[in-house]
Length: 159
Image 1 (cartoon, one colour):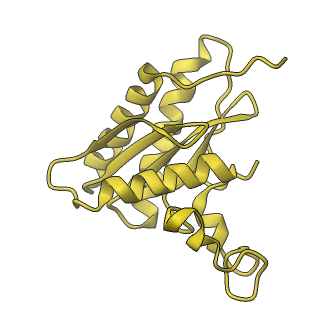
Image 2 (cartoon, rainbow, N blue to C red):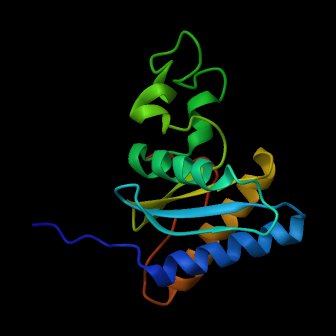
């Protein structure tokens, strides 16, 4: 039997607060979604004035990052992004009834080397979504440091 870490609401809320704070700092209206290891939402927040399509897109990105254990933009990063035309996973974005997001804004949450969830952001451009996503991961790292856990805080995550 293997013991597993689980993201809880307090961690999800801390991550969202940090992502929203970073979004406000850089002047972008974001939706942020935190999912568990199965891709199901623990918490989601859409900033006032953010696009109404943001919640579904943010969830899709978080779902993809958690489920496939990699940052979503890595699927389409040239030249070897597996979802690019001619590569082995071309068309993967049609999987899971179109919920698979193969573009920037989704990051797996990796604690002590294991993927325990995902964070997805929608509303900014790729650079803005990445900054807010890294802020969320850093907030989790700061929160869990005193408990002896390590959190991977990187844009390009592939587990």
